[in-house]
Amino acid sequence: MTKALVRAIGAPIRAFEELASNTQDRLVGAVLALPTGTVLGLAASLTPDPSGMGTHRQLGLGGCSMLVTTGVPCPMCGMTTTFAHLAHLHLLDALKTQPFGVVLFTLTAMTFLVGASDLLLPARRWRRALSWIEPREGWIAGGLMVGLGLGWAYKVLTAGAILSRIP
Image (tube, rainbow, N blue to C red):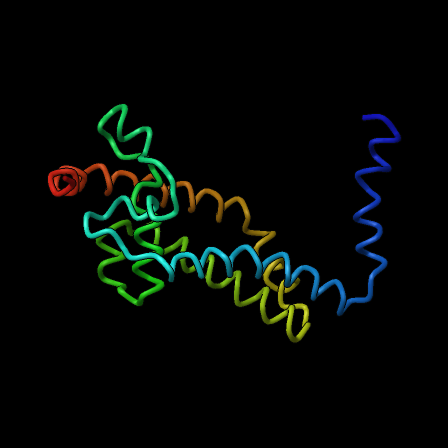
């Protein structure tokens, strides 16, 4: 990398580090809370598709390309429906739809809570969460990949019953 590029990349980091601690906490809180809050709000606005897949179409998105092309659901099939179920407090329906989606929804909600709390009442919560995550990030990433694979396997195994209900 050129020295100019290194300086350009480092400039925002240095500017962030020069901010007061409370300002840093509020800024990171906003960065965490705004996208996760949007996802949770969108999930609450959706009606879960009874087939277990297809809720994303309410957002104007098309069908799953992998499902259409191969007849096999993709690893993310059912996630939007699961999020919508959980946003409406339908835990059992969410678990039946896509069990790994429950994990992702929980992580999304936890991230929102950490972000929103530091945005409103800065107390370095994001820093404590990060200090817990950093030494475990390999295990966390591996666990998420295994969970995604198991969730996909579940979806593939249950797809026959799901696909027979789609008109």
